[in-house]
Image: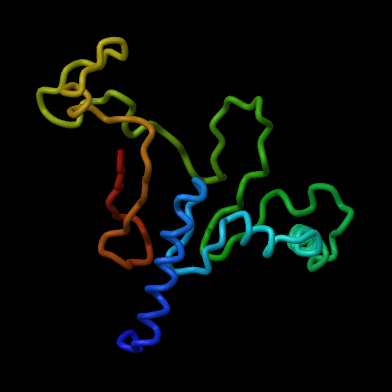
Length: 169
């Protein structure tokens, strides 16, 4: 179809039309379209009725979980601990924002494995947050990690007792 002479001619005419209109104003127009501005397309697609429909759909999505569970009107009924398939502990309830204590599920513990500035290669300098250099940082554990994950070894083993802690700084 791309070799069709009529299509090529039509595309050429559209490009010429767009080029002829370029001097009229500073509005960027598509050479492959009908020469419409974004405002034209937006006005055609977004009407008052469409806006109301979108609002109704958004409201339905927000209310759907409460209606489906029959818990509408019960404040906080969708929050709190819920058993999750595959997780073998009871989740903790939500904690107040003022809580400064680390809490973990019953039977589990917590501790610091690596802290910001800990050396990760031999010869790393002592951490000094006021005198950091790119060279020093490259030899120390960072912060603001994008990804932290536990990869079970061997891959796919179900118990998860052995694994690789992957940290992407």
